[in-house]
Length: 156
Image (tube, rainbow, N blue to C red; front, side, top):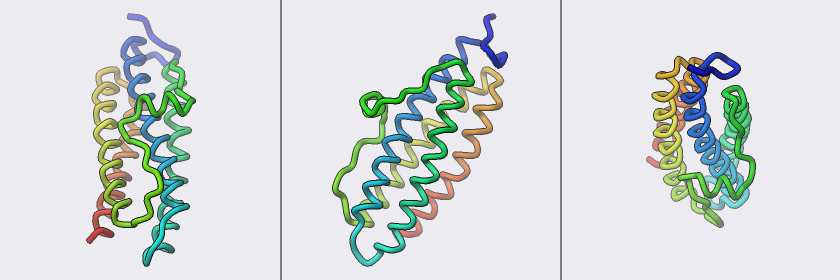
């Protein structure tokens, strides 16, 4: 068995890094959407949602860096072009949406997309004894489950 720099099976680590790149693409697309939501939100919940979207995109910005660094730790290369992100993301670009409830529904769906992908990566990482990836994603999932609950609560 061939191992990478951190002692994990190279083939398994490569599979994990590939899925992490897919996750990275989805995070980058969600980040970009959240920036647009933050800038363009209108209506009665403007102040509340404007601040919430900023909080969410700042959190995602940190996670993007952590995911890219994990890919590097696994001896992979993180994607870094918008073209690659759009080609590999399940989360799609949303433009010029101003309605708070519609945005919240999209965000619930997008966070679910992230959780599904993160759980797939967890299974891959577990088979390779990759505790670093497991810890990272377990923390993300815990936060995102709470975020989904809160977004749904805001929808009523």
